[in-house]
Length: 615
Image (spheres, rainbow, N blue to C red):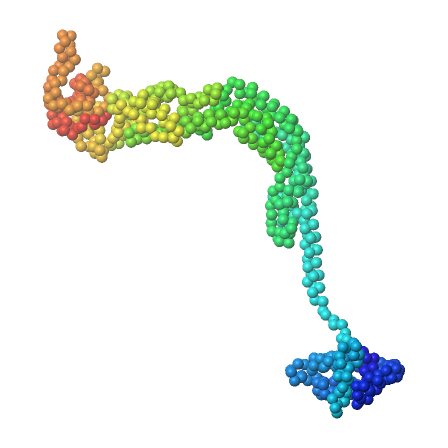
């Protein structure tokens, strides 16, 4: 660059200021040689000066000196003051204007030195200058054309790149590590395996397998089983890998702060033939034990109230292949207590259906009702006794057994007619009657049996059966008072009778004379009821040897108690009642009253009122 400026200066000095275009052209060749020699001589001195200036800081003074040195026409350059480059007239920075100006000067100089052939311009027109004007060439100062040095830029972008690289390394390292060890806060079926090698889980399950001891129950069997019995082994590696697969190692930065319970599964291997041999031995033993059982081994358990198949009957029906499969599934998790279900039993569906039908019968054991009174219930054990199974496991209900029960035990339980009762009279006297009288419950056996059979077969859960009756009472209280508060109490020992109303209050009472206690004329004891009201009744005694009635007496009021044999009536032939008259001068069995008392009782008493006669 310095040499270029020097050559330009020499050219300017060598040319006259006022030459015609012709003169300029002719002198070019003559002067060129001498000019080249002078340029070479000066080149060396100018280079040294340029180097000295290049080493100094660029300033406004330096720019001015360069202009003066190279005789640059400053009229075409921006004005320069001593402080720097002010803004140009168009507002652009002086630096930019200066560079544009110098670039224009370089272009002009190149145009002037170009040959006509190269430029393609008219030479005469190019060489001619305006009159009175000096021919001037503008040359860019060497300092302005000095190439700028390299700019140092801060490489801040390297920081995040380095951080990302470190994080990626740590992350991938964690992924690799947690492919071989378990993450923190990890348990396997409750056992802590935090930060333990995956291989330790494999070793543990294989060790547990070697020492395995199991207990097989259900399906009627109870068998102990060890690993040695069936050559049991385990795929520990597969088990551990399954546990590892349940961890999300790719998300380990977040997962290490969480807790997890792993539940891996694996596969056990064993000798199936040895296991089936053990099962076959159990089946044979139970076949021998079940050979004498009834109902195909189905029995009723009173404590649970259900039918079940006996253990021996179940075990003899075990299917070894199905049992082997179920036991194998349990061995995969090394389950020590293995319970077989009914799926391993031959014809289990038929057995379950039979047991279900029988249990439905048992569940339908009906409740009993006498009128508005609860009268107990048929028990599950009773229904179980009426239930049987044939060889095809069909369920049968013994209907005849039910009818026999109704006419027998159930009648004794529910019928109260003619039975002894113990009760407490309203005045506090405790009384026990003899077994006699016709008042009380009498069920209809045939209709009751039909009702029970239908209820048991209905499938309903403990339905209620209204027991059909031939005769009813007020309440049901076996062996005790089954009549209401309204009744007539005849106390033979007191020779006194009382009529109680519905509230238990006495509304009538009187002394009486009962039958002579000689065994032939006794007033019949027990619980009876009023059967009739008759005015002007005619009393006839038993016929004598001649066929005539033993007596023939007319009374005003008759209330029958034992049909037409015994009743309440007035006795006009008596002048006294009560006391001990009955023992020697008593009646033939009737209850004698005075006219007034007989009339009042006749009016107050109702047919059906219970009459309790006792000592």
